[in-house]
Image 1 (cartoon, one colour):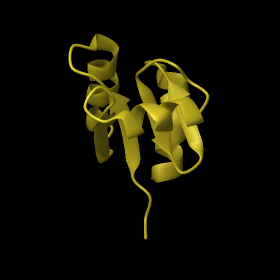
Image 2 (cartoon, rainbow, N blue to C red; image 1 turned 180 degrees about the horizontal axis):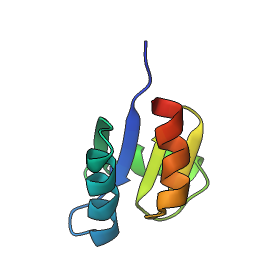
Image 3 (spheres, rainbow, N blue to C red; image 1 turned 180 degrees about the vertical axis):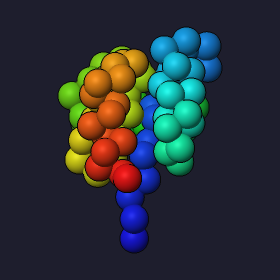
Image 4 (cartoon, rainbow, N blue to C red; image 1 turned 135 degrees about the vertical axis):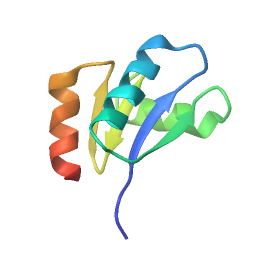
Length: 79
């Protein structure tokens, strides 16, 4: 089973939208998990060691915020 990129997000989060737009431009499929809609998703973010969003995760790698340099490392793992 292949892993999927996950973007932990919430409505109204501008940085979250920037991450999703960036991944879309790079041709990366991802799942959006709204941390306000499901407490389990908030716990998953905290398990990565982060308290805020956006968090982009793939396999055991996670990146907080809109950081193209770090996001490119995840993109490289996916491609």
